[in-house]
Length: 458
Image 1 (cartoon, rainbow, N blue to C red):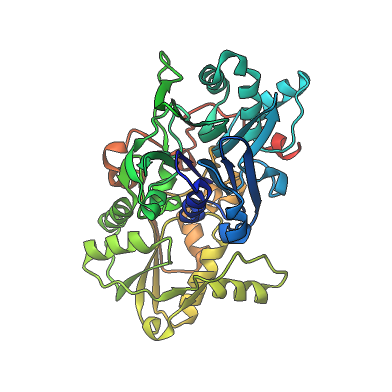
Image 2 (image 1 turned 135 degrees about the vertical axis):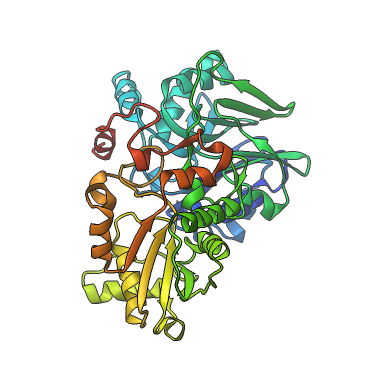
């Protein structure tokens, strides 16, 4: 996950970056940071917490400049500590390089070991720092060639922004795992993980940064370079961006997220055409698939679970009673709508199963007569190594349990997962360009399955 935002050639760049990060807050809630360049020096501010908690008017006033990059973090590699907050800055030869990285490398540990043997000293446990070391090591060849050399060494998912002196750089892995969009604003240029960040401040969307592309923006304008001229790569856009991560008002991989989520719901009805009193989502993750199912089936939609939008993250509590209160703090059923009814509940996915079990239990306790639980993606059976926090198969309920066993665990009448074909049909012409590894275990690039353990032990 994670969200990145960069802007070039616009006064008050940090203020616009702040708003851009606000729009991307759904991509990471652990930390936020902004780095800005004013023509003479680089300034930075970052901290743990939400964008609104890390920044205030006084802080932004001190971040004057016309080039800026920002980052909101959702950790996959590296623990949640201040040293791991991005953008990550390094100073060398009286110069500063800052990086903001969305994605996850699968060979970071091996490269890190090699660099440490050569005398490199690391400040963090992030895979992003490996990228910085490789770039700096090759800078004598020029910035573009340094990035090309780095891209040829690293494997995995990366949509990256760099701020280096008076230059803003964006580059993206050749498989295209994570989204990255390019736009124009007030005579300058903007790059962001999702187009919803463009909409907030009025950026004109131009195009996506292409997989394997390096985009350099300086006083002469944008210039594009290809890191891989001969090698062929199979595009592997993360399909979970469509299912859950991206905001529904964004365009990613040149597709509208809202419409694809509706298509997922419509395909659910084609595969599992149930009759009930109404369709209801678990908000907000199931909202748009539920709309699609409702429209395809002709059944009414009710928002019979109310989400408290003002709650922060809840912490695991020691007793079952307190844990149940934590669940109800976020979602609460509307008893008068549910009492005596047969309901179709829609959600986007089922990971460990414990949270959904508690939510479904609350619907039953509210008086629902029958509960059919439908999921707008196939069973999650395998870990992701490209930026989603599915750490191991053991933590995925569908890895070792059948659909019927999971249904009994959830204590409901029906459990149905959308098929892989139903998922591919919903993404239309991208069907041959998406990564399905978390469903099939077929990874688009070779993965060293020990690397997460290795990184955790650094």
